[in-house]
Length: 350
Image (cartoon, rainbow, N blue to C red; front, side, top):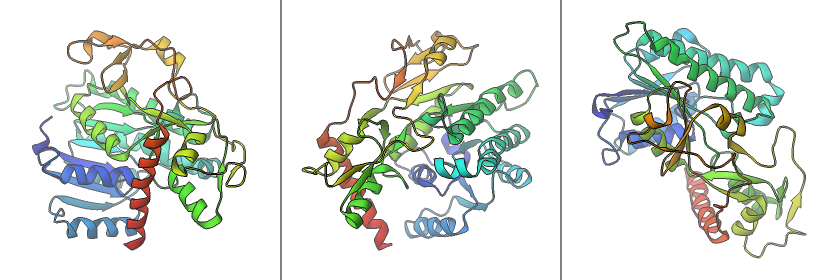
């Protein structure tokens, strides 16, 4: 992809991932300069805060801030005009919030996805990458169910690009990944806050496992796959896992699990272990394997066609957090915790 002639729109551009993507796209040392970045989100305060940060760092010249909601089809279509690439990160993401407000989750996560597709097709966008989650695989909560629906909406949108004589044919793909280390509401900053305020952490289940990935890794992965995508793929970065017990022991060496940690049980809508590729998907789709990711291919794309030079079939029965051996060590978790603490202190001083 010729990034230097690319106009990119990021829905939910003021979220953790959106902000990281914006900085990467504006950093001339990361990739060639893009023509422009449009930040589309509904939070006026976050846009103002991000504008101040970018202005302070001299990165404001190629950025447009657009207030809008993915539910608003007309506003979204206007925002997309002239755009080459859309990265769709906007969503309602909190499991309890979606459980308690199901129709609102559907309006944003499903109907909003359909609005992004329509705007991309109508405006002749080149490529659209939808950001998904491991909770979309065999979902047990409404958030996961809506993200599964969104995946279906985007992947099936490739039908609009075939046989219509369009000058530019939109390609739609998805990226699935696990828990982002240090993001708002995630377990590591929550544990630090609980220990500071209460002298005790609450753990749902010590045996619970999760995929962990850093936000910068996700952002780089997304940009790389946008350059490689052909349309219809689900890209899944290789990730390592950790149990809640390992996270507690890594963050707080010497913690007394009897007095400083309280096990409260799995909450409604949670899984003990997460899955990124299900057995059913492996049975129904070719899955390509590369050094840094797995790719669930669309039905009409043989494994030999992706990536260039071919790729081997995945050998495992299921890509799940429980079955993998690639676990973080306690020392590595401690190092991650130090980085998260430093970010938390920086946020407090802003």
